[in-house]
Length: 639
Image 1 (cartoon, rainbow, N blue to C red):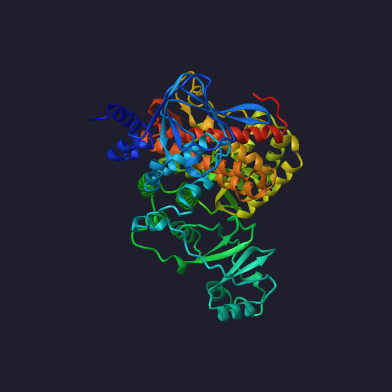
Image 2 (cartoon, rainbow, N blue to C red):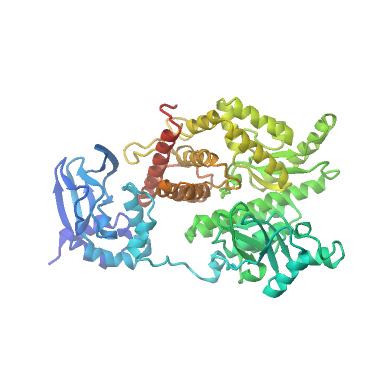
């Protein structure tokens, strides 16, 4: 006889993730074992410290409040409604519940036995990942790495190893570094290289890399007689050292080497020259497989002769991005590769524009990319945000020199616009006199912003905290960074004001019932992902890392990962924020590709249940880090 109740349960479950990933036979098997439970309003399903049940729950009708006791005060963590899953802790580990679930209204629940469900999860990675997301979204510890390990018993995540994705495998690096000091002679270093059979030696100072000497350096300096063989290393070493953290992909290493015309990359603890050197990647270590798309694109960018060529390459880059998103490649890899390709495009445009000028630059300068490109988070083609800093000159020469760089900037921004990077609506571009300044003028500008911190000053200065050099003399931007850190370190009121500003867009934590949408205008009833989610978490990372005067880390996810190292007591929160920043970036990219726009505004009705769960988890992290800001900076009220 047919079990019509089980059929109705199966029909309901298959409408929601992760049950939509199951085969029909598996759904029927589960549905046959489901217990249908009716609960009255106020009924407790399970409570904190209670032994875990042998089942978890799906809301069929009604709503369930998820709560915890925070030092005697009941705090609502979440509200589950139709299709939501809760009570997952026993699926991950034999532990007592850490939250309480209580019926917010009359409800009907489906109780699913863990014994029959868990084997299916272990055979379906996508199901497992969704359940981890769901579990994390209604717990007090949003970061779920430990829960992944519990569910999969320490197994490493499956990663496609096809030739198509070979480029995203981690590049092999040598851990046994051969190093020297600045004061050693080239002869002694050459002997080291010969004895250790290596082609490079890292120059170390306080455990950090300050230079590198390679076979090529010896050929170009010693072999041609430029210096005697007993000269000290600091005279012939290459600097600064290009550094990355562990996990740099083959593709990323390749395009970095081509971009900077180098054959070695130093691996450091945090990926910057300011931390301990732990290894080195050589060109020999990253012999490429066939069809390495990022490398092909990088070569095409460097060989381009026309803006039209770069525009065509840009369309291929977007195809590459779409492929990465479809293959669910980790955003850490995707964002770094896209940054390098974007950065190389900007650099090539500047090179070509200089050739179109009537003369070479009169003084040294640096082109600074701001905003998402400065944070290495620009995946889609968005507005231009850039500026120029040039070497100080005599007062009587200043305007003539500025006019040169303004003319250059107009050529660059025009070509970038033709490629697909829209002009900034606020004209925050190097072609604007306000953003084309000498080093001295920039220092004075930051001093005014920081010491006279009004709303406009805070907005402008926060944008410039995220700059990255795309072309030119890095010494100019380094000196500017040193000035900024010195100024902020001496003006605590400014940092407090910056923290206050970071709280102006509170997290839309009440996701299902209290979604903050636009109330009027072109995007009425749409959700502003940038304003409500991406900006708050970006602003929080910026102000928190500023306290520690950390240089060379502008990316939001990397800032939170660095904060997790600096503040072990808040590690779980910061890692959850790092995850959230990458998840939001991916969500915006998917929406942008889908609708052929910036991905900023979302029509809520188009979201799947799985997407809502992922966003809900991100909102929880934003809420928690904003609470930390309130406490740390003693903020009691804000607009």
